[in-house]
Image: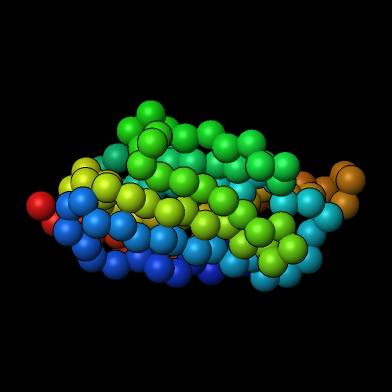
Length: 120
């Protein structure tokens, strides 16, 4: 199993930037894909961005062009660069990974969540 630890959240003003980091601790055969989700109270958790081990990225329409996801496979880390932040980006952000321990055993891991607050 891989434990995920997020960092980099905080409070910023609209238009500013933040970078979230997520480090995977533990061993796995594969970690693919890795991604970021977010959730606000009363709403379902939603995908923000995901990235495969060979660099294919997918973004929610609401963040495309403002957010950039990247990963370092050797370090088991995934990043989310968030530019031009808006108040509606305020949420708890979660890192998630889908992986395989062996060819026949898969798992999913979530981070503990990190708060991002954007004020107008």
